[in-house]
Image (cartoon, rainbow, N blue to C red; front, side, top):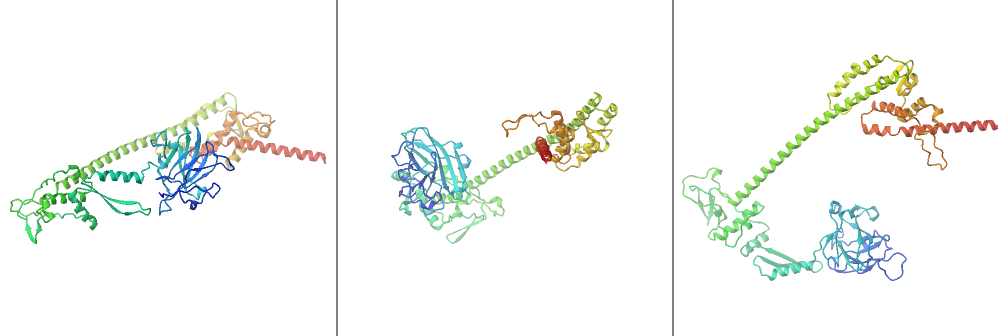
Length: 557
């Protein structure tokens, strides 16, 4: 971060103008708008004029909320992520919301549970804020920049609080650490200065390797590549002559490591690194060798040529590395196969349960229709309507028509959750030009047929309500019996009969079931029954009032 410091601009400047940020704030006190006296406790003092500090501007939005602007990286004005600043002159139990309003990253770990760091003079150990108090979002009020907001409560007035993006690690601390390593005079640690940064800071080149390999490493770095030994199967070249190993049997051979080396230094993740390390080690132990192919081959008496890959010689470390990778891949493949088999079994079980659930829903639908018909027959037998032969009705209820039986059998053989509903007219009893809707309610057959061709749930419900209650009853009733809240002196009207309301809902349900099987849609459309009836009552009352006005006007004339 830049070493300079600058006092934050006044709060009255444009909040979206990031170009006004020129340096870190230095002991900047935020005073409320219109306040002219001395600063009091609770008037926050911000400071970022220290190493690794970053806070270029502070704007007070309200008594408890502050917008903070961070400075971009040096020579990269589009990258704005790091912040580190202190706050003092706080008041005990003072709650604030800090909005860092000009983040440049579209994705941040703040969305996945990360939180800013905080410490104070009495508690010098860094701690993270609760993730539930941290929010990262895109704000249109700040030029659509990304904003990170967090809430905090100050608990000690004498403390100085410090907030940071994550654990700070300063340049000075890093230089002290390198100096301490350099003072130890370790053979495998080399420190050189490459140059200086834009802000005239030292740029170090660190080399960590053995003294014997330092010259080889420097040559490899200068050439920008690592020399890999070639694997030869039958011959190598030495001093311009071809040394033939065709008549000799080759075998794997262990190369002794130089003294002072640890086994862990040979283990590498990359195969090329393993081969390069073996080349360097064997080059030290076999100083007389002039060709790297000799490291991987050893002559032994024999008369047969190496004509197959079975006689090929590879380093043991390379072979063991490849073997470990192959075994790990086999283990992962075995785990994947087991997980795949477990998932397949779960899917099969869920398919069986879904099929059973569809059959149960179909059976429940049939039982509900049968129960409804039996209730109608029982009401007729008790004298609530014209008498009907009970045996005939039972036979009709217990033995559905062939078309319905074929429909139910087809639905039972499929995986559908809901059966196709039966025609509406088959569910209601016709007698002497009347249609029995249930609960002793009869309507005219001709009006019932006209109602079935009505378009829309609203018109259907309103017409059905008029058929059941009549306009004279509806105009003096309400759906719930509760007085309206729009008028202070409103008198509650008698509610409509609950059993008749249930008949209206059942008729509408049968109508909707012919159009869709989606239970969510059916429930949403049924929930508007009371609304439709209320609208019809209001229309009737409005028409009655208009008629009364016309009569009064006619009488006056």
